[in-house]
Image: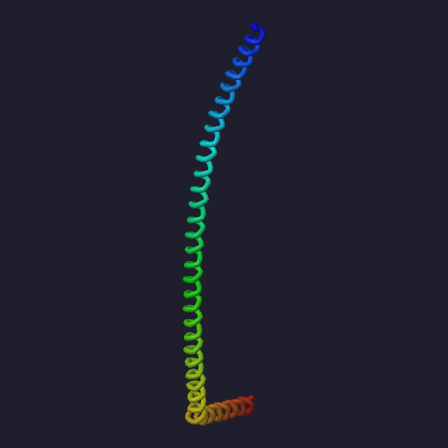
Amino acid sequence: HDVAEAVAAEAAARCAALSEWVATEQGEATVATERASQILATLEESQQDLQFQSERQQAELENLLYEQEMALAGCVEEVAELQGLCSTALAHSEASARRSAESWEEAEGPLMLARLQSSLQNFEQQEAERAESQ
């Protein structure tokens, strides 16, 4: 009977120690679970922040791309307009040059030719006089 009580007391003591150990482990597991939940919540919040930043940056990049496309389109239009103006100015310049050349040929050409002939005759006369005087 005493042996049975001793075994029962020993078993009860072991059960109490085991219960205490289980309670300690459960407490640590609860603390670890709460910490893991906090870390998970922080990670989810960080992920949401990163997602928001990524979406905002994507929107900003799309906006910048649109602005660049519009600026490029404006430049293309200005270049086309300038090409048209240059073509018009060149056509006017060519027409003006033709008119000036035609006008010179009509008015100045014969006068210049007469001056050159006169100068040539004077030169030939001077050369002939020099040759006679030697």
